[in-house]
Length: 304
Image (cartoon, rainbow, N blue to C red):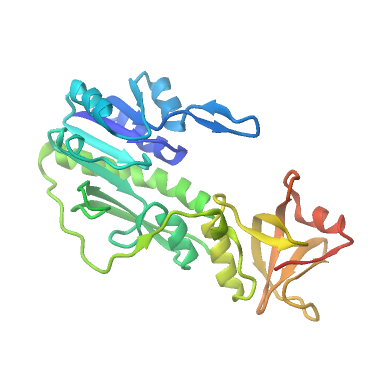
């Protein structure tokens, strides 16, 4: 079957590679335009663009799927469109252009967590059983019929980056099963059932940790915003990024919000427990070991 693929970030690459290695033919790849990265803001192709070039698949770069993208896809004459975290909407007439329409690999157990940040919001909510859903793309957001599903359990404190990496690998099986089922006509799909919830896009302010919450809630919040947009606390009115953290026992005699050195480790006390600050990044400085940062401050600091 002739397939056109749309995706952008690193966790869309396993799906592209799996399709390219299958019995189906990936005739073209759509991805977002090169973006400035790093301190020097160098224009850099997306991970999907780099993978497509390596695989020898034609690439169309666009931040909006308008007339040019539609004409490009029409010339490819695909039977199916597959989208994995492209970062934009597929609208008519492009939506109906492939013979079998479009399908989407979404990183949640739909209809829970429709929207831009499903894994991040699920982790913030304290969920540890995370799902993937392959569904038919329709004009309504993440609302089409379900073709295949899968799920995976994660330990508390697993970051969104780690969870997405794992789901992007395991989700390829669900995606290939859907593509195969559509190709041989054995798969029709079923309407979504249950209560829907929405995973709003994350902003920088979403990374601010609320240290008045219980430890497991703080850890869940940290997990959901790591690595992007990045978890942080305020120390001396400056943001301190918390790059790596884990839950530990509360330190007696230390006020909540106070960070101290305990057995050679930087520990931030909370209302009912504590976080070990394994790796941090002070404002304007490079990432460093949490204990080294705290020793540089005389082995104590107050966060809020």
